[in-house]
Image 1 (cartoon, rainbow, N blue to C red):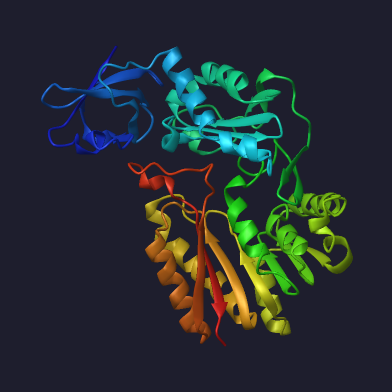
Image 2 (image 1 turned 180 degrees about the vertical axis):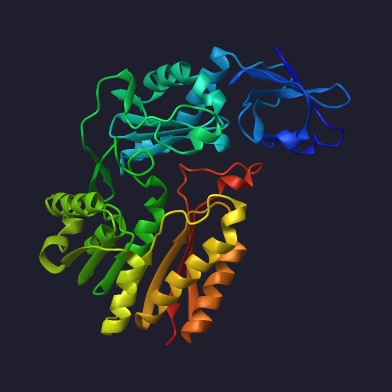
Length: 407
């Protein structure tokens, strides 16, 4: 096994169990793409083992911080089994069958995301090491996920290019059967169709489950505007909680069409908790650029009781943060101006480089420019199946703030 020797004084993060070793911290040592290497301090102490990535600035991703535990097939299999086991409550609860099973570094498997959709697992392998152990991971998921019918891979994510990994648009089945074109999942009272081949991420935004429910509790009898609606999650929750009118807006034609299908699907849910959905809520689906649509609403004097802003990632890196901050400020300023007195704004950032403190500052500046006062009534983050390791704060990427207008 090859060794990677760290520069003097550059081992402190590894000792604190942070999984990333950047190229600038490496004194010497190299290996092939995805190979396991022994990580050694400048003084010669073995600190653990990691996966080597010659094409990435993150040169090594740690998978074992125990000098006596060398990652092998059983080690990786056990990591997957343990990660699935930590989601046991979701399988017992049965309120949803859409669950993140492996959350990359925060579950000890850097670069691996695995999401379960009603018996079908869709994975993304975004590090050279995760790619190297793909077959072992797929077999372990098929073995340890209750009722698993298939394990597939999505390789259409740009970060793979930074790792020197091939990019491919086709879904590849690694274990089990071919998943259906649309997979039906449940989330509380809501039913969704998930597109495992062309949908965002692995097909759906499982990380916003708790936020959707929180917004729903505030939607009764309100006129709701759901921006960047994707396939309609926030709007559907608002409708099941008695919203008077829901406007769903997204620039993607495919997303809007699936949002319509999801509305029709949930309307047929026999669960009595959604009885008001089909009888009281009026739906409107708009295919448009959200920034332009909000300006159009401003110019036409349209207002709303509750607005949801759940935009895509504005910042891919720290270098893009200030540009992203301007985008977040612009869109929140527009939304704040469209709120009726006492209205609610639920606003989110999924940019990991955008800190909570900076996001709060952006919202405060937007409120000042809108000449409105707001109360912060709740914060949200990714759900419990998207845990954040204490040693890896970068894992906390999703930030949500729910504001109430005081004027």
